[in-house]
Length: 205
Length: 242
Image (cartoon, each protein chain N blue to C red):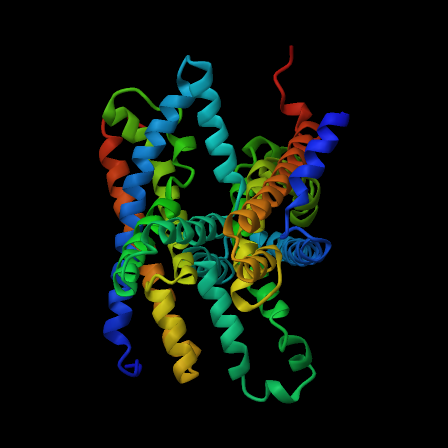
């Protein structure tokens, strides 16, 4: 067995943060995606334009830049409000906001596009939406790694800190890579099963 | 026009952030980003073509190793791959004594290697899908003409596969541009790195990051229109006839 030098439990906690963040973002993104899709399909000219503007802008800018914009920008916003609060309390809010902001950012990720056309009944919608959803989930899962850059302690951050402390990059980074592969493989399997279920009665494939 | 001009001058009058110097940082960052993205895409493309052919081969000992490679590189975050190569390259025995170290010492090359391997994995899968989608009839016709395997690949399968892969490959290029932002994490002064520097110096997140977001947006649109143009040219024969 590899010697994780006591970082094992923290790595697992980090893995949990990754999964939590991924699922939370997926949920938020579906809600936001449905809203944007409705706006884009709306007959109202303004709603359509706003929806299109949103998807174009968000999809044209790297996730990391958006994250930093919201994170650092949000800090200043929060600072204005909390300047008069105790320093300690300030930090608490920061930590909460981190998680929230990252969740929102890591985000809405393109969902709108894949959900745009689907508005039939739910099972039928699922049948069509599942491949897109599964794709988005895979991309989202890998995007969550970026939150380590703005300071959320997911498993990437733990591994990076451990690497810097021990100078043994492979000991920590490779297990993390394996965990990502594991999550991806399990969800791929799960999506395949769901797909099979929703395809019942549609003959081919 | 006159009005617009005075309005613009006034707008920039009390601006302390976007001086010639900071614009210079951004320009430098843009050059780095462009280098990193273009080089990794180019090398990745060259790697991906033979890999995709191998991946569609029926020989298991050719097919499975390539599948494993694409599976691992598509299943893990690019950031992890970058860290493994960036932090790990030091630990290769004796590398610090060879000429390779002169290159790998700088963060640019580990990042280039990580990006290249990543994009090659995605591109391989894109091409494999396109090769697999070659209509049966075309292959049969090529066989009937007595073409060898290699000739058929060169004249029939690959040209049409490239065309079919074009839209998906355009997405991959945009994805690479966006992914290149993480190069800033390993101290490379790319566009995002320059932005973080400007932000840290002036503590002005909105100005710094919105400006760079606009640059990325322009680049994305540029790529988008380039591929749209290419698709129009190269896929013209697939358009419905009117």
